[in-house]
Image (cartoon, rainbow, N blue to C red; front, side):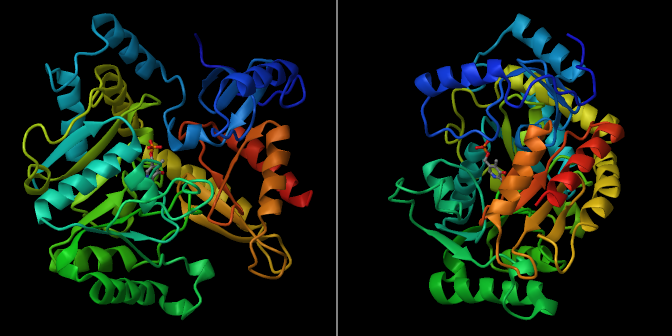
Length: 443
Ligand SMILES: *Cc1c(COP(=O)(O)O)cnc(C)c1O
């Protein structure tokens, strides 16, 4: 199947009649706890386009939540998957071994920051990678406490939803939560109530204060941070914060984990978001963009930490699934060979000035932030910093109904995030920005 035509065309309302009918069937069959951004059923997708079952061509500014950086049907990923499924779909990597898993581990060991000796473990979902990073850090340190940030998102399993900050919808009704998870303030500059010129310093001081007064540094197994907070609202830590935290962790024998599941693998214009400040984490979690749309996640880090867990302690039936590994091998090759981090920087070059032009004292857009192809607009009541989730929802709905798939995010639900596939064409991106601008103007 060829890549769909890379042009926005609407032939029905969004959602169209076929999608509406299918969505009714879905509601009768599928658990209501699964939300949906746009109730449109997909027929095919690739490049920067999603084609729905009514024949509409939508511009994809979501990438299935930062997953399809190489597009949703990259020919090399498709071919790798096809070849692998014909050979075998599964053996379980803990029963018998195969090369593709070793290839992916070797590539991640090379691509992640730092030239120390590394090991990688492969899993299935992002939450699983985060859980395993914590298991590894606890074994290595012999300590239990885990320090997380406000506005953090780390997943939906019991431990990772405990680590996630936002209650509704991620935690409401799902307690009791896992023990030994402690939260420190996120250096969210736009909403910082202290000294605006020293957000990194003040947030770091508060982290040290919480750890020393409430936990004891000698009890902390790991500090985990998203180098750009994703679900929380694309919060970029001010320069200096991550290096300080990494250095503090090192001085106190704490494992510093960068959760690069959303920001990693080229999305921010560097291979990893920590690369912007030269930070070398002890462990890095990756998932989303890793396997071109197939479910695969990884923990990569210092050999002595990774190897602390005895054989049998890590794994999972589908961990390092061979089809997902074949897809990852192809996706990683594309990311490197086609220099997708450079594509992400080019996307920022085109999109940021246009988004920033929307910010102003009487504008509903309070701030534009992010890096590379991970950009966001935060909506506020005009002339204030009061969150305006309705404005974000309206602009997203405007864009969706005009054939541009956008996602909202943020603790206050007032952020529109742009996560286009890194392979999106420049014309398509410009067209999507036209629609977003019109959406903001329509408020
Ligand atoms: C999406 C995400 C996760 C969870 O990944 P799943 O594959 O949904 O379990 C964890 N951390 C971050 C930063 C994420 O964006």
